[in-house]
Length: 64
Image (tube, rainbow, N blue to C red; front, side):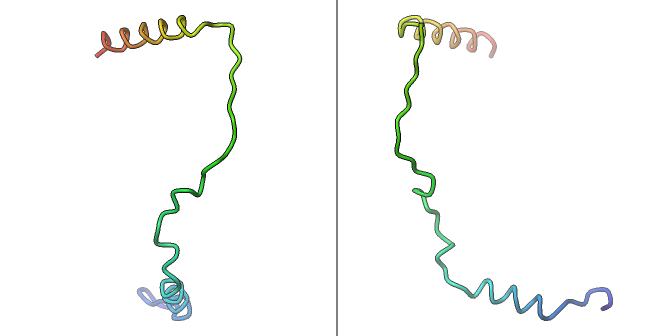
């Protein structure tokens, strides 16, 4: 094969792949859905966590 030539069988395979079903064209939004629970055990109170979040937000605003 010279420069610019192509393998006709490869070209035919690519054409067959694109002529297949259109099922793969859509997005499946439920592909990665999971059912389950998450639990977290912590010694820190909710008030302390909310207070820390406020501190982080304040620090972020002063950095801008």
